[in-house]
Length: 438
Ligand code: MEV
Image (cartoon, rainbow, N blue to C red; front, side, top):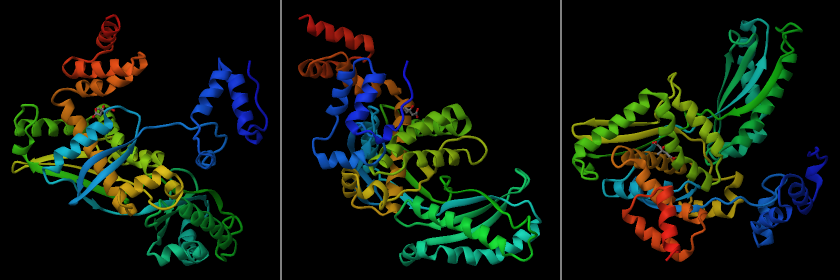
């Protein structure tokens, strides 16, 4: 029976490893060795990673890969992706190559507005709160001038502050709903610092507002925090071509175009399919977001909320056929940064941004949206033609062989063999046993 631990964070790394291995693992020595095996041999690099978070014991690797040949607005990119799922990078590369010869991807940033809110309770006369807010607004902006001055010099800062009344939902509940331009920074720290100061200023100013009764002066701030829902930090990526250029797997272009459109329409109409459809999009989006050191949880939360903005969870991509032109596009909210956070700290993130030719946040939004669109195109293309398993199991073959303990030479032989045989768990096992018994 394990017992709670006191002061775990104060232990040294070796002591933490010892404690977890002894108390929670079956073979403590093997567990200790495993954790140490994943340390970086360069002390400085390991220290850097240790200090990203608390109670670090080791590193957790994800493959870092490249999907080349992405033509975006006439510029060629090789896109770094960090992801564990086999076939995602292969699918992205395949989609990139497909569109490379058909005009490439076109993208537009539709907005870059970030959002933050001060949530507070005021149960007095709403008209008085409205009048108070008119005077308050300039005071709020002034109160954060030391935080915003650098951002303003670069063209960013606070865009607007609105008073919003949600009294009908929760008695007394109001918000300062604030919008920001944070340029190349994701902006979480900037926004949260502004919001916490707004909250203080709100309470202080209420105390000295002569029209408020003594009760009305007691504004209760519940919390001040940015919102990861950023429907006006939006990017669009699209591809299009004549349907005759879409001939696939022996299927005529117009049939393939219709099948693709129908697949998207189904995801538009029905949430069970929409979730999986969008999951495929997130395979591409998350992998680039992670490789470039951005916050994939924030991106996920914001995107899924956007997918449900019309009251039902729906597809993030759209397909349209008009005058024999097939058009396929995505619109996604993406709050990303290319400065600050991990971007200047994690060596691989720095490299990823260098590979992407040091993008601005706006450029990164476009690249990430393209990765999502490409991934969806690749998934639907397989689904409406050969089915997903053919390609997927081929890519998964090495994982299976590694799990079965195949040697390098066995793997080589079997990869060749399965070029024209169906990959299943049983067929791989059988083929491996056949080789091994020779
Ligand atoms: C698998 O990771 C993603 C897919 O399920 C996406 C889709 O069904 O569109 C293939």
